[in-house]
Length: 89
Image (cartoon, rainbow, N blue to C red; front, side, top):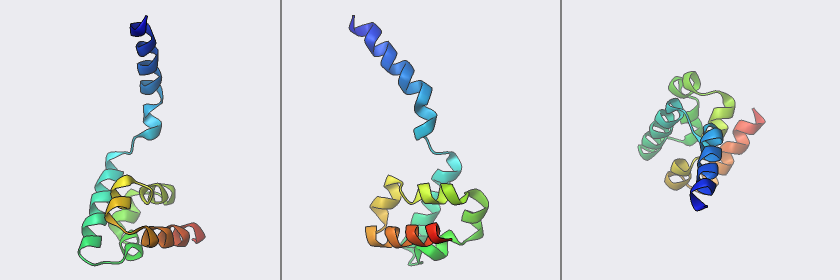
């Protein structure tokens, strides 16, 4: 029965969906980072802003740098350099 099988898939997806969702704070910070970067600011400087520091932990900042929105908006070299800098701190 395909209906029962798809029900199991839906239950599994809903059970673990929280692992793949970002909080609204991360979404807001992602938009802020992209907007500030578009204005010409350096990514590392943006991540040092109080707005970012007060809303995201170090781990959340690292995860933010892997987000599809930032990967699309900011060059890969800049993201990798910033990740390395955050990992070192």
